[in-house]
Length: 157
Figure 1 (spheres, helix red, strand yellow):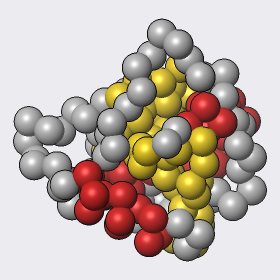
Figure 2 (cartoon, rainbow, N blue to C red):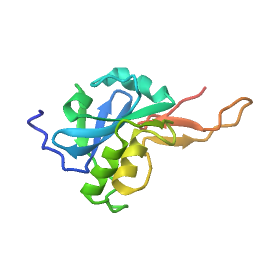
Figure 3 (tube, rainbow, N blue to C red):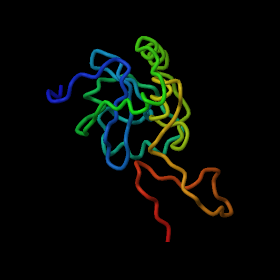
Figure 4 (cartoon, one colour):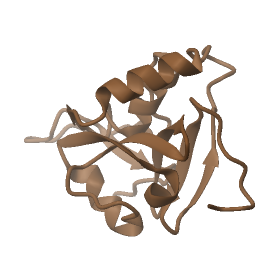
């Protein structure tokens, strides 16, 4: 356990600082979090988990916070409490626990780990680390605009 970081409260959003993006989990008590991760991701994958953003399916996992964080930093970040009322902690945990083990669709722009935890805490699926960028349509382009991850600007020349 990390002595310098206080124990999160049940229902808290946990922001994990992975290289190039943020992974999100929700604290469910006794040292455990529930999070959305690709089926192949190993606990504590850290930097290797950047590939997880390229999958189309993910599994809801319940794992120890310290194992999910690995060597990365994390913080409690209930950043939308001023915009949305959090559900009661018991309801958050109940909803999270019901989903453990289920395979869900995964999409970086609209169904990622941040959408997942915000839906559990607030009943509103949203992600601030993925923002649409204006792009001229091109033949064969997919349905999504160019995206930035973790606030990094995508550059085209």
